[in-house]
Length: 68
Image (tube, rainbow, N blue to C red):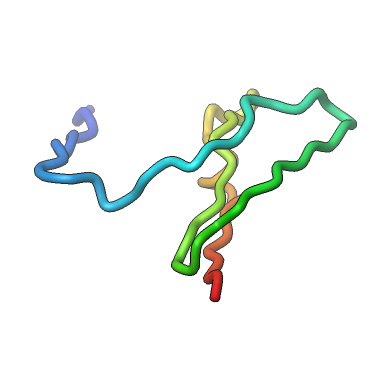
């Protein structure tokens, strides 16, 4: 069985983290208030699905947003 390859990032990251929160208890919700400058952003959930080991964003929990 072949091991997955790792790509090493070279140079400056093409993104900057602007914050978020760690988790939400099952059955509850949460929100964040952000003061964003105009530009392109992506919001995603990095939590793991316990049954599959996949991240929520791999299951489609991500959204690109443009602030004008």
